[in-house]
Image (tube, rainbow, N blue to C red; front, side):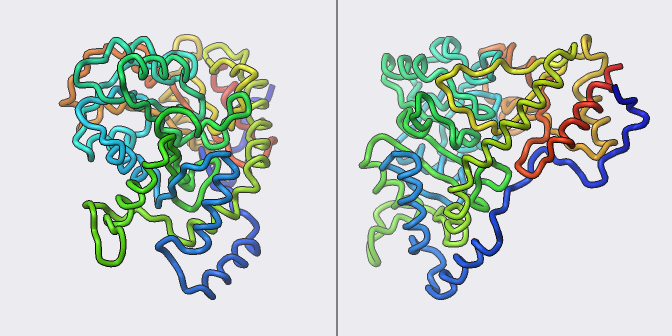
Length: 379
């Protein structure tokens, strides 16, 4: 085993994420079309083509494209008429709860399950009150929620079931896209994601009548040139974003395959190291997208804390992320929200979680070196 004193820091930073960029000439050809069209936004021809190809990719008719995932979720909630209380997770990116706040909806935080960090259905059911109107669950790190259990709860209590799938593009269950579950699903195409459109977002939904509503809401409420039918906002995807998304779409299998190889190497090197806990492997019916590689650090077993490891890795030009820490309910803007659930699992995970670098351009030999550094830090 290498001696850590002899391992030199990486010359170039190894970040937790780095966007894949398609061949420049492919994107430039699309830019030439946009330059010729002089149509930059407002449902241009590139966006129309992108939307059609995305429908085919997902095998789903009801989709709407947005300039980012946060606005997509905000508008989706409004389009569904969600109000009152929504049961959600504190273990997510803060935009999940922000979307509720912007719609004047009170978040009800409940705990997560310990294996894959998604919302715990038993805790969800215990949190239902007469004021509950929906469940907002998150496919954390691309790991699917317990879809059957959540659907059963939503059906029995007459609740809308909404998924934040910001991490889950490309995930399938028994060959069926995860976009096809629940009443509404939001995807983020931010540059840090497995798949991106520079920045962008998408809603998928079951009720086709929702399409008209969200199209009004994302374009100032305009029905036509002289009619404004509701107070909308500006959340349209532009042609440059659509072009990147369209260009990227054919590379999704390739991106997932490279991340799978990185994940397998991480697992091979780290799974037997005392103090490093890995999420269990997913069942065979799930086609995972390998969006992130999270580990938990048990300070007593590993001999240094998660935060110490996080800082020491920076000395080697390795930038990991404590994702998600702190919990959303612990941010100053949400500390006034009552939390009845003790959130034992979420709090434990938030203190131990660390996501390691994973992206298309990350060389496997660099993954090996990174693992050597982590392993030697325990010695």
